[in-house]
Image 1 (tube, rainbow over the protein chains, first blue to last red):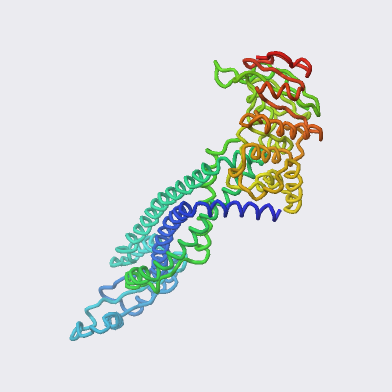
Image 2 (image 1 turned 90 degrees about the horizontal axis):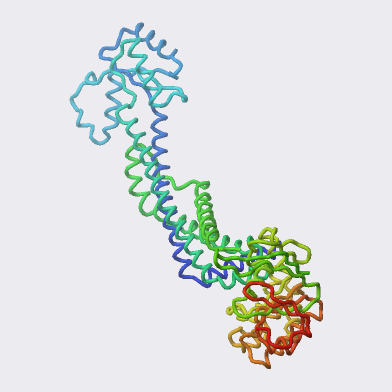
Length: 298
Length: 229
């Protein structure tokens, strides 16, 4: 069994050695397709991570024109905390709001010099339970609060969160469509390379058929050749995408996302890296199968 | 060993290569298949090693129905059938040794076993000193001997030869025929397709005569004299 496998690998490697230029073109095509996919995936993964972090901080804020008397405020807070979506309610008075605002203006505090804290309204910050930290749930809660307690000045990030989620969905769609085209192109190239190899080896295939090689015996070295092209292409794509990440994405994307509240840019997780190579191998094998199906007649 | 029952082969509606051929070739026999060009000799041989399927009829090889076999089983049957062609069909990028070893490699034989057997067979055909040469550096006769060696290495039940002496001069042709006779003497059933009249006279054997796709005659060796076509 091992000797057979070794024979198949030797044949596959022999095919590759005999056409290095063709092999390079194929591996290059697979590498480019997968590298672009990987780069897209890095962008999507990191944007998704920011979105996840933002969603985790989704809360409902009810601004109060005039804070009610203490007792009424306590009753209101207890009623709000009793809601299933609400984990905790925190009252932020004008002074605290002003202090937080000054902290955000780090280095430019003199912009608010001379202003009174009362310019900022007090508010009730409703921290949500994990299950309900979505724009949809926050919106539903805000609607109920407005109806029941008459609080009208409610914010839950609706101005930016929903458009951001729509943008993320679009990004995923564009990635899928672009990825699909690139993969199709790479598949086409692998299939053609194997076809050309088959043309070049037609005499050998004919003799193999003549001396009793089974269809599978004939196909396996070509399938392995496709798989090797794909694995090599996937490996190169991984290296290229890492270089791209270090040189371009970490700086460019990093600047955009950390400004939006993200942390450092993540590279592809291990599972995805293995998937990339696996994808390359699958691409190679499927490309070979397409070529073999049309070409090799028994 | 070889049985054909009402076998016909048509490539297109107007083009019938073989019509209603029925014949039997017992184990160990040496038979010629002759006839003018286009009579259907090569087509008949292709049917016997499964390269083509008959349009009608049944073909039995060693008791197995070739017409009802899967491709994988046909491949396994071919491992017991040696085929020799007029144009040799050798792999020019492989040495003589590698060409002859090929059928055994396909069958998964171990390297040591293969080497031993290849040397044995090359010695039989007189090419043991040329095992590292490439086919195109050999003469036509030598290339045909390599082709025969490749066919013999599997100890074939059946040896099919399609115009094996077609490209060779008479002296060489005689040597080739001796190799085929030796294979027959060792137990292989041999079927040689040829239109070489001299060959038929040099080595008289049972002769099947095809004409326009039909079996015109089935002669025993002593009726080969006189014009056949």
